[in-house]
Image (cartoon, rainbow, N blue to C red; front, side):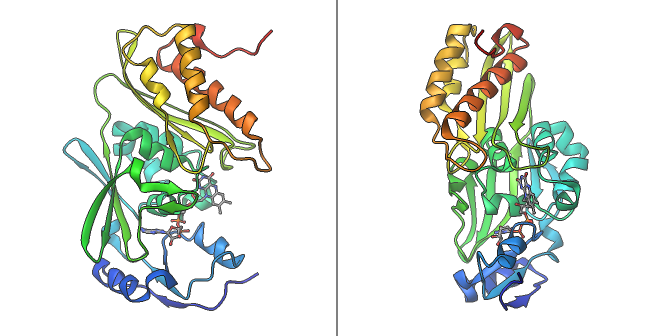
Amino acid sequence: MKAAAFAYARPTSVARALELLGVHGDKAKILSGGQSLMPAMNLRLISPEFIVDIGALAELRGIVLKGDALSIGALTRHVDVLKSPEVAAHVPLLRDATSHVAHPAIRNRGTLGGSLAHADPASELPACMVALGATIIVRGPRGERRIPAQEFFTGIYETALSPQELLVAVELPVAGKGSAHFFQEFARRHGDYAIVGLAAQSIVASGQFADLRLGFFAVGDRPLLAGAADRLVNVAVTPEILARASAILSDELDPQEDQQATPAMRRHLAKVLLSRCVSSLLARPDLQWRAPA
Ligand SMILES: Cc1cc2nc3c(=O)[nH]c(=O)nc-3n(C[C@H](O)[C@H](O)[C@H](O)COP(=O)(O)OP(=O)(O)OC[C@H]3O[C@@H](n4cnc5c(N)ncnc54)[C@H](O)[C@@H]3O)c2cc1C
């Protein structure tokens, strides 16, 4: 199928892009890498009347270290995140997660901003933003807003962005001393959307978590920063403490049924990921989940 007819503009400045969004409002859609928008248009799941192609806005592309934060422009492609020495050095969780996003052809076009604005609950990158404590920077008719990642994702394909706003960049705190991260997902094949996944960022000192942020994905309508992590911080983790955290996690999840998994299966996989994460970050094989004999 082909997309319905639409008007098209390729502005050469952010100001002009915002002007166009101001005029066309919710009848317009921003085109970034096109890897989610174009399939949705071709399947006629959506039929925007006006496309604002932001591909020429070079100012929205790039990765820059600013003090203790790494700033990544919205138009930065997945492949550039993967190849970036700054990302590898300062936010290695994001590099690991991006290698699980789709396949090379899609990563060559798809952008970080597009993925976050699309807000697929099974997507890796929104969960990383939540785990890393990112700030999402958007620009609109009333200027710039800085939105904590946890407040940015509001539902399935829904965010705090208004139709007149453009996501311009994200800022990620750089990993400090003692930082350790964990990324794993269950997917049918490498590159598929996750059945369940976990992006975690921690600080480990003397065999304990001084900080732990658990970003689960594909377990609800948006990425979940799991409160269960609180049970694991500043304590010597025992199998009993982990079991308690796991029970708390189970209550926090709101997994959906689809062709890939039942809610019960997703709940189970999330708990397996939690134990793998804790076991791996603390280098404690005794905490690894084992199937009942
Ligand atoms: C076969 C296939 C497999 C995939 N597998 C995965 C996967 O495993 N994991 C995963 O995370 N993703 C996956 N994707 C999606 C891919 O990562 C996309 O690149 C990403 O979701 C959207 O990025 P984009 O730049 O292509 O955005 P686009 O498709 O251009 O836009 C997506 C949406 O975001 C809006 N938007 C884009 N940029 C902005 C902006 N700067 N400000 C405001 N709104 C904006 C658009 O209007 C649109 O609604 C897959 C895609 C395909 C086709």
